[in-house]
Length: 177
Image 1 (tube, rainbow, N blue to C red):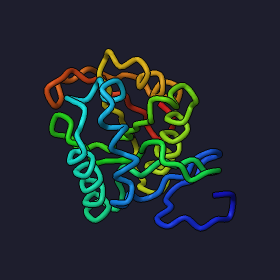
Image 2: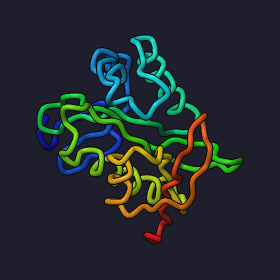
Image 3: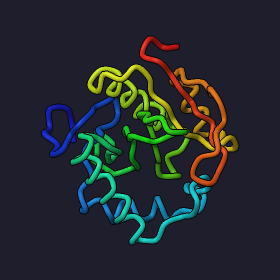
Image 4: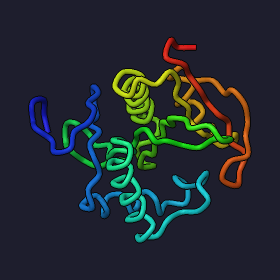
C-alpha cells in the first residue's frame, strides 16, 4: 500500500502508518494481539476470540455514536494490521474526556508505532474534534505506555481509581500544556 493507494475507511496517515476504521475482517489479526497475556498485562485480562469481536463491535458503535473511536493501525508500506489507536469518549470522575488509546502487537514494541499513531490521534482530537484537552488513562506500573504519553508531551496530572485499578490521568492541553 504505497502513497496514493486508496484505503477504505482511511482516517489518518502518518509517515509509516495508516489508521482506518475497523471492519469485522480485522478479527483474525486482532484476536492474537488481545489474547496475548503480555500485551494485555495492564487490561483486566487477555481476551478470547469473542472478546476481540466485541472490541471491534464497540468501535463500530463508537463510529456511529461519536463519529470516531479506536482505528485499525496498519503499516503503510504493506497494509499489515499491527494494532489500533484512536480517540474515545471516557467518563473520568464524572467528566467526559477524550482519551487517546493505543495497542501494538508485541513483536513490534519499541519501534515508535504507538507514539507515532497516538501523536496523530492527539492532533486529530485538537484539530478535527476541536477539543481543548486530551487524556490517556494509564496504569502507574505500565512504563511502556507512560513513555509513549510522555514522548508526546503529556504529563500525569493525577492518579484516579478507574475501572477497578489506579490510573494516571495523562493529559495535554491544545496549546501543549
